[in-house]
Length: 435
Image (cartoon, helix red, strand yellow):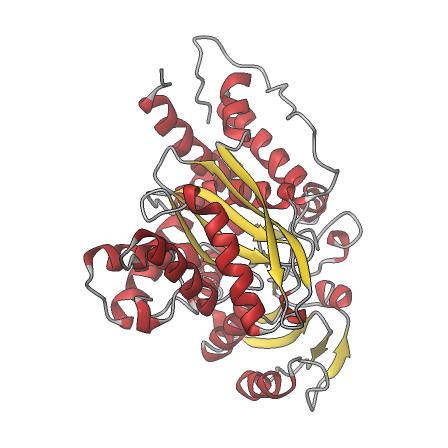
């Protein structure tokens, strides 16, 4: 499949972004993925450069007066990667390792993700380099409100819409919405998604990413004549995404044999009692020491002999040192960027089917879109309506990606990126350059 922007066949793009990112980093992986898609599509260097470069970004200082009276300073970022298809859309991450390159990568992935599932959004992302576990609720509120006030010129319901991500939640979004609304003089629910229901959130948003993972897993298994009740599953990361994914997999008959979090992992070859495990985590804060299960490290979990592996924690866990030991037949990416370019090559060499993040974990942004639509209409849908719309959107997107992959002999990742990148590039070309 080749779509060129010139009258003659384009050679592979030679463009390398200025200040190239560290090898193996999230941004390096994102750039490598885009380069592959641009080469498949036959795009010239100018278009490739435009697609690789963020449209707009801001780096802000976020001072905090702690409860003790001490003042500390954090760094915050917001990146709008591309807005050719619509306003920016992307999460707000609180994590000590956040830096501008990570945010750039996440914003780029959001661009392709929104395009793959046909949402009228561009990609954006934000973050503050803070470990939220070390701060009180009132301190986190002050950080959120200060960060929001600093980036306020960039955000809005028609320009850039935030959502929860790692280290943030519905309460964080309520603070963002309130800060923005107070400064505008009236309540504007559509400036964020993933809010509490009481202030304009949507039913189904909290489990949407997890439900989307299960939908695309089911679609991938169906192509091999296998059902969810026939497979064993291991999930790295038992946070907001991984825990709900485990519950949905178990409810649909899958045998969830291993899970892990930042403190360690557990396995039970006969299957974990997921509802009881979730109660244990609620009580203790970790999956560790769950009764009737053996310990397993996060690294060893990736190499377990299971049918489906769901990396749902952080970026870059499947790399040149870990991907070669994966025994799962399917890897369904619940996290953003869990597989590096080197890891991808190893998985392909070992005939592991990878359902890529830009498709697999798009359920969250799909229901975020539903929440934004509902907020703009001030009319809310039932949970059943949302669940049906989500399943339709995810299975349709998977079918489009899978059909292209089979037709053109591409991996699912390359097919998804080709679809997403092409939709963004076509919108850019149709709109033209101003002036």
